[in-house]
Image (cartoon, rainbow, N blue to C red; front, side, top):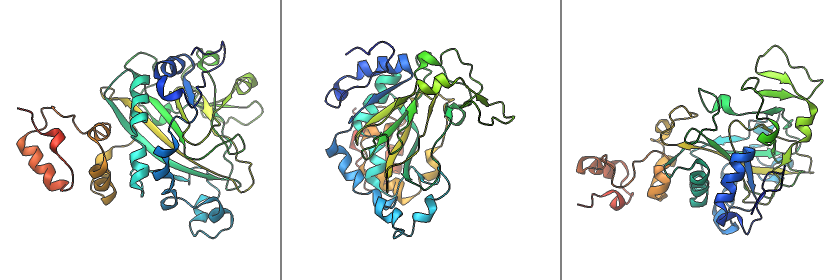
Amino acid sequence: MAPKIGCPLILPPEAAPMDLKDAAQAWRTDGFVILPGFLPADELASAVQELDLLFPSADGFHDGTDPRHERFIGDEFAGIDTFLFASAQISLLAVNHRVLALAEALLEDDDVRLYGAEAWAKYTGACDYGQALHRDYLGHTVLVPSTTPGCRQVEMFVLLNDVPDELGPPHLVSRKHTADLPAVPNWLLRPGRQGGTDRFVADVDPGLYEAEVSGAGPAGTVIAFEPGTFHRGTQLIAPRGARYSMQLCFRPSSLQWGQRVGWAVKSYTNEWVEFVNRATPRQLQALGFPPPGHQYWTPETLAGMALRYPKLNLLPWQPTN
């Protein structure tokens, strides 16, 4: 399937799992690709059923019956929970096999690392979710974005419920319209808004806002984009609306300058142990576990891992000779 001239590729739900090559081509061309329904309902269900462990329901927030509702008022970022989550199923969704396959296809590398993961709840009227166009690289790398193969990073928005335009989907701008823009500034305001003195903030031609593409889609939609892609959050206007999503960040294992968080700081928690016990070797490799066959795996380290994670099946990492 080839993208239409001048239009970022949006794959239909039934084609998305099989068209990773097309998705990768669109991602390289436009800086993003939208995959409606990429995660099927049966793979979302167990995570969605545990959203209440993290966030109020729409009714719980809007009726004020959930005691957590005040947390979300007045701050667009207050609705973020960071990996590891109170729900093991939501933590496992961050390294779902389809998500990993997509990251590997986009980054052209079969050894990728999850370097950031967040779950995010937004509610109509809680605060102003409308953002200026911006890039994310200031929080994702100590350098600037690169389009060189092997030097790219990828972010993904994963929609956990149906998100029409009235529920604040992200908007993105194709690289076709921004390739000539310098790395600084980072935020591009609509003309007429005060830009201040920050060198990372500037006014922009309104045509850039007119070139936006909506990331609206059904539950399971994945929006993959580069940290150098201009995008923004939009306002929720649906009455009593709620939007639940995840933001996932991947890099090749060899890319050392892409940073956000380190997982070892959380590795003593019960949530981490529960996640490790239930994850596959491939999922754990995305968090930094050496793959089976790596020189790290010796009788000494396997004995230590058996003590640290008594319920973890260590057979995949046992030496074969």
